[in-house]
Length: 179
Image (cartoon, rainbow, N blue to C red; front, side, top):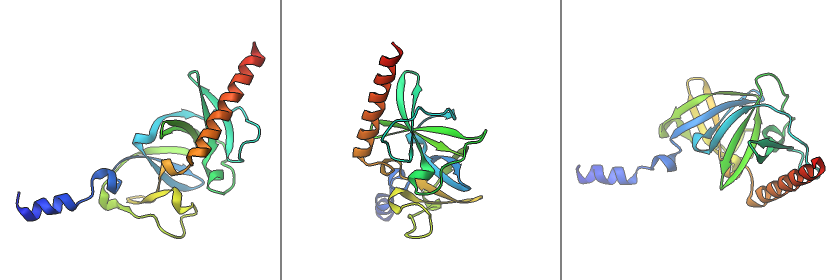
């Protein structure tokens, strides 16, 4: 490899830096979103979560996922819009980030898409309808734009801790009441 090619290769962003890779694409209130497949643990059908008192309006409650308490949120409410309307194609995407597991309600899961670095643009400073801090970028695909979410930024560490602690307390209380 020539010195010029070596320098160009060294200067090129790695796939992790560029955002290139596989994404789970889903629909939420007529918008197409994507999350890095590395953050997706699984996808399940919608089941009504058990409400948890004194939680933010975007938290729908908790579900029992094979013996583990998982907080479930309405991503649309988290973005500051109307609540997601549940219908037969609605589902819950189980995400994991920073050691925390969380379910997000979506209208429909569409597909897994492969994105190259060239398809991903920086997050716009206007017009996305979602706080810029939540965005990783915008992907150009054959079907239009897909808003790429930065899963780790959807929740601050304090919010994760509060959600997890409240979920565990609720589960312990319901287990004690059943006994």
